[in-house]
Length: 92
Length: 211
Image (cartoon, rainbow over all chains, first blue to last red; front, side, top):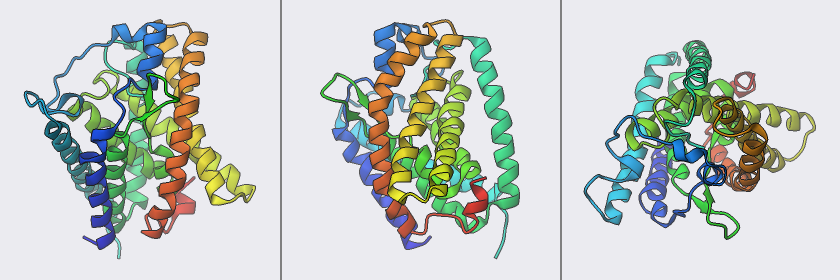
């Protein structure tokens, strides 16, 4: 893997693993608008996820969200490359 | 703009999922012909970066609300419309399945919004501004902002069609907040783009890919 790819993954890990701990915990624009107009009350959860709301269930600490962020970056890269290599055209 | 389960009416989310399915099928067919193997890791790195950047909620005007990057303008300007639908879909699907960010029944609608409408709006705006030969930074800023506005408009339509909120109210409220969130998108897109281009995160056949 080239150096520039590693550099981008490293930067992404820092953002998702550390910087994300300082992110605003206020509702985002969609949730805020939903609170103001009422539609957010209908929200429900159908499928339990392994790391709901970017945290590890049962671990109540910053480490929980930090690990979720790191895992998300690696999963995203791995999934894209896995499928991309199968979809893409072999050239040069 | 991650719509959870329970809000959209079944006929709305089924239709949205069908439309997204048709577009993504085209994206896949397109990438089989055009996408080169060696470009896959850089697109994967951009997907990972967008996932990370979406975790950073920035506060809005001291209000009790926040916003975060979508990243569609960034990936669409770099890689073109079709590849960016695959990059953004990967992010949106992982967010829903692994992190419960966005619903499962709403997945098609969220893909339609953030992985199809947002990059489409960004690419159209970017092409238009390139024709006017404006500086790249202006194009990045405007395309980023417009992509978020487009998402807010389509999101409001989906909500109104679901009958959970009247259209005018949905448009007014979502556009109000997303006009500010769009500024964040615009700034981040303009700041990150030069770094990505310096890493040659773009496609040799980008001109063609933008179509």
